Image 1 (tube, rainbow, N blue to C red):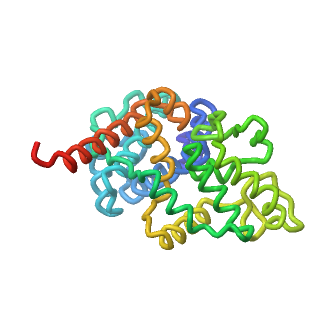
Image 2 (image 1 turned 180 degrees about the vertical axis):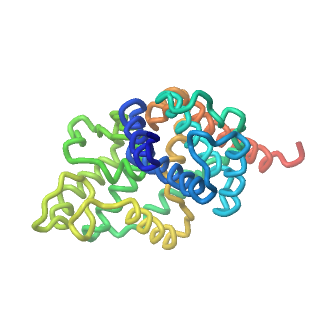
Image 3 (image 1 turned 30 degrees about the vertical axis):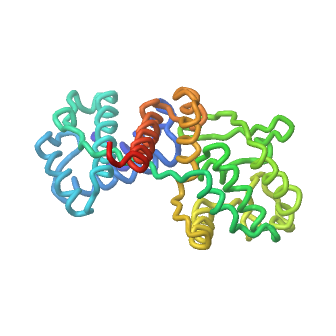
Amino acid sequence: MKTSNSQILDSFMDCLLTERHASLATRDVYRREIACFFSYLDSNNLEYDTITSAQLKQYLIDNAQERKLSAVTNSRVITSLRLFFNFLNQQHVRDDNPTELIKDVRHPKHLPETEDYDSIETFLSVIDTSDPIGLRDMAIFELIYSCGLRVSECCNLLMTEYYPEESRIKVTGKGDKQRILPVGDIAKEALNSYIQNARSQLLGKKKSKSVFISAKGTQITRQEVWNRLKIYSSLSGVKLHVHTLRHSFASQLLRNGADLRSVQELLGHSDIRTTEIYTHVNTEDLLEAFQKYHPDV
């Protein structure tokens, strides 16, 4: 008897967790994409165990048009399907993989946006640290900038993962991989000031293991951090996006002579090719400066 769509999807999710150690966020993405694929199969009287490469290509075309997908998102769809059909091979549900004849969508690599030190200082200077929220926000953005954190890594940081005497933090990144990071003096001062003078006020009578607390006394969310960033970005006139501080951290390290492998470890990149994109940013900086000061060359 053929396994139902919901059962095979649950089994696929279990495989991603046990064999690939995929994070919850990654599994959620794959679940949504395969569920969307199943919906298409049901609407077109198709089956996952018999669909052909030609039919799969048609699905990708129809899906991209209907959802108005970018090349990046469509590439994610193909990756999800490729993993799913590999799983079907492992389960002996199919002895072929219809995605093998489908080429991934090539999309241009967009260089990460970065800001120089003075711009970051301007952005931070508008944060009012006379109240608990301001002290918290200063600590958040100083820490992200000092350690090159992802916003989620900052939000999920626990009190037991901050080692003030050693000026270190332990963060959990993508794929639940942990790394120990040094905390710069300025970030450490901002973090200590927040913990000593603001965290308990934000908590009130509540308890939390998280370092960063919202005005409601609960762990701060990524959306809240993004909203606070937008406020300070508007006040300072420095147009930052959520990952600009992390990108600027990486770019400045490389500009100051750090080796690529060290930056990869600090950022928590599993593939050094992801880190290499920052070398292109620095090259563009050099070209821009050269053209500015030597326009006739």
